[in-house]
Length: 66
Image 1 (cartoon, one colour):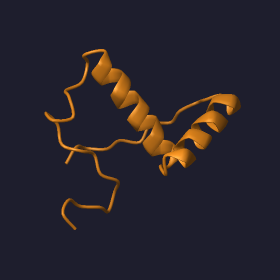
Image 2 (tube, rainbow, N blue to C red):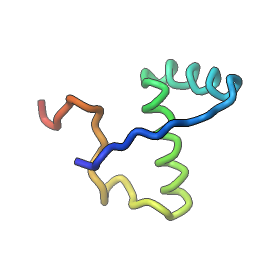
Image 3 (spheres, one colour):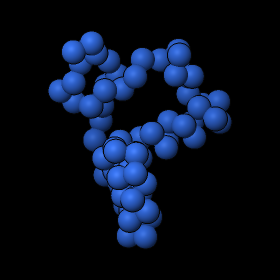
């Protein structure tokens, strides 16, 4: 599993509110939504492997196949 690191993020209230609504719509936490959006943008820019080439990132405490 990929190593996870904490990173403080300063973000405008307007953007955070929009992210919260989007995350709620997709049943994700805001943190998971930010990572999803960043990963998608990185893949589209050719800066990250495609999903088939790299394993999914699971939230802390979860394991595959359980």
